[in-house]
Image 1 (spheres, rainbow, N blue to C red):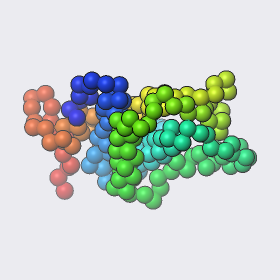
Image 2 (image 1 turned 135 degrees about the vertical axis):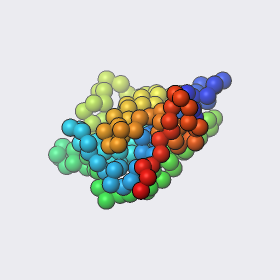
Image 3 (image 1 turned 45 degrees about the vertical axis):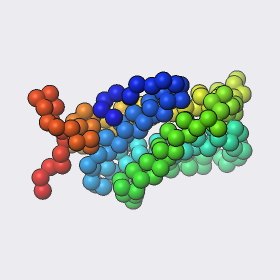
Image 4 (image 1 turned 90 degrees about the vertical axis):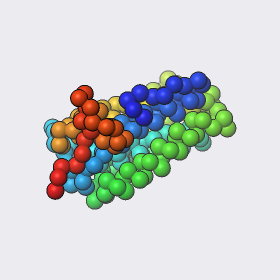
Amino acid sequence: MPGNAPPIATEREAISAFLRQQHDGIRFAAYGLTDEQAHLVPSRSAISIANLVKHVTHMERTWMERARAGEVRAEDSRPTAEQAAAYGDDWNADGETIEDLMAAFDVVARDTEAAALDEALDLDQPVPVPRDAPWFPQDIEAWSVRWVYFHLIEELARHAGHADIVREHVDGATMYELMAGAEGWPETPWLKPWRPPAA
């Protein structure tokens, strides 16, 4: 998808296409990384590409489970510290390969994009607001599946931006040259596609 989402004709096409664009942002940030590079934490943040991929996969899967079920899971009765520790696990990719992380990410991404086009999933269906984290509002009972999709686009865009910054710190590669390399664009005076360094 060279730089921009394709033309769209319907709301569902727009949701699916813009999700795909943000998914590609994550894919391009991880493109060509070794396992060692994917786990590097090259800035003051604790974020690595591997951790970001694991987090967005978990986040997207969880939101789509909520959207499809139309119900909220039972409230977590564990102590707050225990809940917080478990929440942090979705960021911890220690010991996982970037290949496996990207494979899991791709399964979830394809499913979410396809579900947006499926008329069986009603975009107006209520999705109860979770009560398992302090950032969820207490004065709203439900969002809609449509809201969930736009929230996913927002979350993915934020984390694709994080991934761009982390990747540039890892090896200096930036999004357009990574996109050009991943998609096989020819070299031009404007842009040289990223290629792995010669061994």
